[in-house]
Image (tube, rainbow, N blue to C red; front, side, top):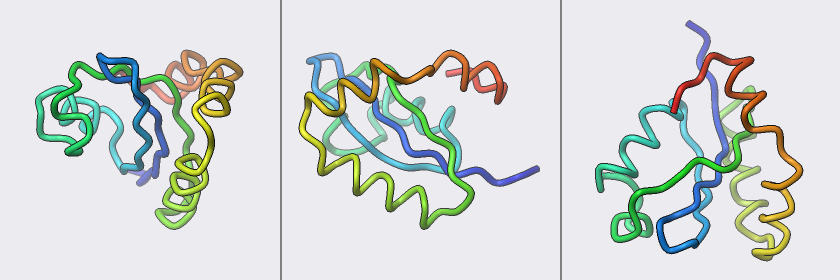
Length: 96
């Protein structure tokens, strides 16, 4: 099985956005929603996946995470709006 690296944005129950990276997006979303995810999301569950990028390397995913975290909220919302999340999930057989 090919190891993938994902950079993602989730929307928390209070509308706040959280950006992270992982090697298994399905597991990570479950962790966030069970309260075992990032400290930021623990009191803001459930979270909903809004944006997902696939990178070849951990380094690339982490760099992209850092770049997205530097964006203003409006820029993150634009990324989400222009993104084809459902297509990426379908083409990569990802169920979250």
